[in-house]
Length: 101
Image (cartoon, rainbow, N blue to C red; front, top):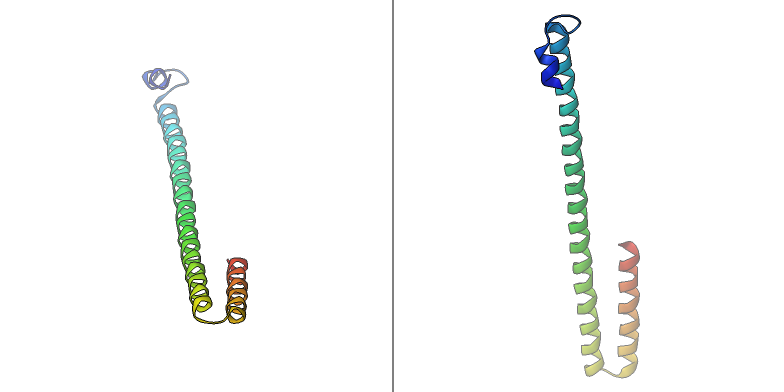
């Protein structure tokens, strides 16, 4: 259809109207391309945020596991009351970390 309009140079479709039509089509295509680029950038930004969140969660899980391992070592080396107190303290710290996250 655009080729038909470009082919017409007499009547209401003079050269200026054809140029204006082509210019408007180019604007519309540029707007579509810009919208697609913005969508791609938004997806990439969400992906980066998700990756950072996953890294933070993995680090916090590693800290929690290390704390539990330390408590288990205390349980082996000390009496049961100290081990239970250390386990409760580690649990409270882990819960605080989860709330902060």
